[in-house]
Length: 163
Image 1: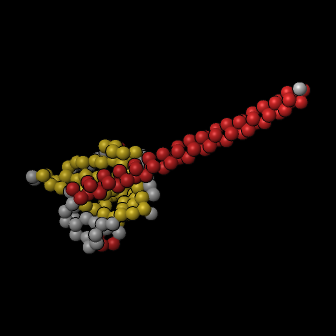
Image 2: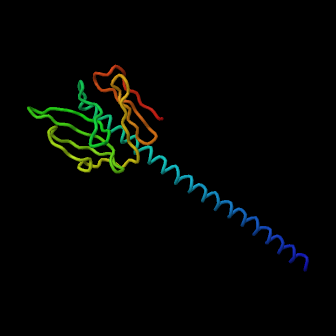
Image 3: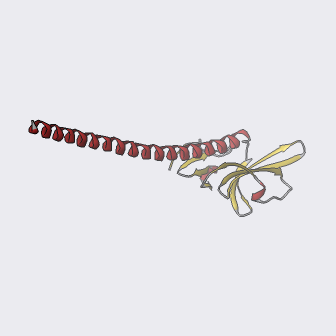
């Protein structure tokens, strides 16, 4: 009788050990999965923000595109995409630029002077840059993504991609 009780204790201890190992394994897999999910969500959010910023810049440039109306210009020490347009007798300009961690836009009459701080904050972005390439192409880089703008008057078609 004593042996049966002792065997049951060993069986019970063995079952508890196996159950503990299983519970610990499940907990570790859940914690690992939660960490991976968090990282993937952050990566996806960053990529979505970069795509949104590039789409915004492309749409603005294409909506107001005309011969020599979309180009890069210096805006108080910041390289900015400049869009020129006219309404009636008055000339206007739009600057799209990166300032203080934001994609910003400033629309004003050409004759008026403003500072980058005066622009409207459109979207938070860590890195945004513009580069003048040959044939009138403009390279726009937002984070790890980039695209090429081909304003009217340039010789190549627009292409986009990831750097």
